[in-house]
Image (cartoon, rainbow, N blue to C red; front, side, top):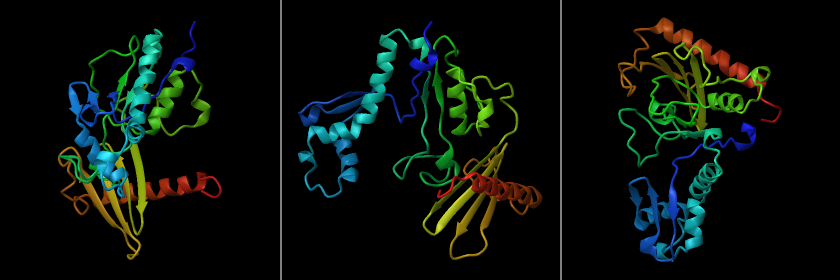
Length: 261
């Protein structure tokens, strides 16, 4: 009997793509399903990766392959597992660690890459596991990146209860609709954000090095997914409670950080 641990392939990618490369510029394309990305579009990406390059037509095929290598490798890994007849022993996860950058349209959500607004932290999660999961089902539930660790370990048959993981197994979760609290924080230079999500409520905190007091916002994501209506003063008791929970969580994270982190 095959050991699922040896055949489990975990993929956290921006996309599963078939990459075709040729020395002719016009033939260098990326095909994702019915979507074809042309060489000129690839060149736009290369301009950001190689900002000192004057003539992007001179960027050779090897540089283009380097840019596209993660997609190529992950597509090959999936194909290899399926070719070996391991499709039912292969768990594929499709997600990303943040939403789109400035060129992406994240509407109706506000914010984007490197923010804790919904436009920065809300991303899709697609799971495929033939023979284990029914296809075509959609669950409108909240999850967080740490859930992937617990999900993968349990799918591989690894005992994880003793590890005291922050996440939960999304495939075996007996209480998928149970209210959960999610916490985030980020710091970029003199500006930082922290956030708490509990059910439909989200507390968003802006922190500035030059100001001693943070700015706190409260949003109802059910009625205001774009986080445009601050309800802090209308629900100050709830906001204060969520803020205390945030401070407690940050203190617990600080205590668990390894030395020198």
